Image 1 (cartoon, rainbow, N blue to C red):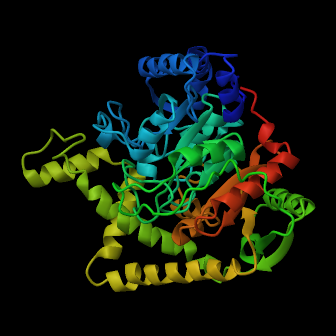
Image 2: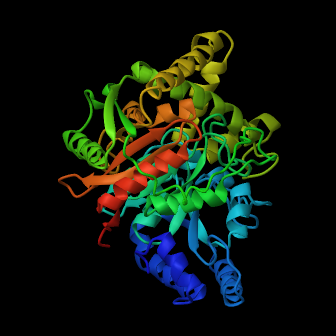
Length: 483
């Protein structure tokens, strides 16, 4: 059952072929057996999970039903779950216990899910490799010398290593799609506003979005059905209709058009990645889809724009961690000012400090217009590029990352190279678009490669239908690492 999809697990539970308690215990045994090598989990909640599983079994026995009843999931450790630690993989929140449930947690619980624990990530979601976790890094289950990706590295590694059925991550600049690509699983970033951010610890509020990491597109559609919807607790939550994403998966793809952005197949793209992605596009053509070249001319400015805007928002959001209201407080202080500075110095890691400094600088007097305001204007140009592209196509296809999963430590001494690895994913966040990463091949080193699909805002239905059609015709998503 470790390798079963969410849909398969749900069907077996409904038919009473397996109990939720048996399944939950099996996953905890699996975690005990392999997670010391993978490092996907930060903390487990075994007693609570088994209680949830017992409750699910009682409901199934009495004939009750819910979309995720009895299904064991993992949650990225920046989503609040009442009574459970939410550390954001940071020393400053090392002992913080969330006093309430995030909206997505309420929805998962109402859907009957069993929560196994909280999974690893880059500190405050700032990173592309999961090497910035304050506690331990998550390794790639396909090769332990390589990164799992970030910031949702634990979410992707847990699914790939069969330590949960599915997981939730968050995506600010590619943090669901890139680790999903690196670990050979399916990752969905919904449209900004599709899923409530209430209870998600903020990194960059205009970019963050919660989404699922699963084995298949069908599983992602099922998860999106559960977590979507307007939430009055989130002022950025969109009042739009939530269709049945699972019900729309079998749509006929003939006549749909795939846009191929020429800027995504330029210098810097690994030859093996390009070959696998182009083969993926050919597979879409074989399903009856047409292709057209499109241009996203402001792609070259996306990285600079993203790191100006994201760091500015991070600087503001992380100002709340001062040792006064919650989180750890420095004990080595003789004044209020020293308590602030010492708490932040001791509590934040190097990458978080770097981004706070960058963000504070671009917001400072004399630099706001030159950097932050200009960044917002370029963001508009990037969105307009996509608007024009979607006039001639239904989805856009390209790589998720320029390279397969890189070696641990390879980019840590060169932040700019690490930032540039997000070149293909961050534009979707800047434009608020939905994005999907699906496995489309492997490198010669047996590392997974991901195909990225993008769609118009709130058109996840088309995105998921295309991804599902691709997975029905291929078997890349059925491969698992041997641990």
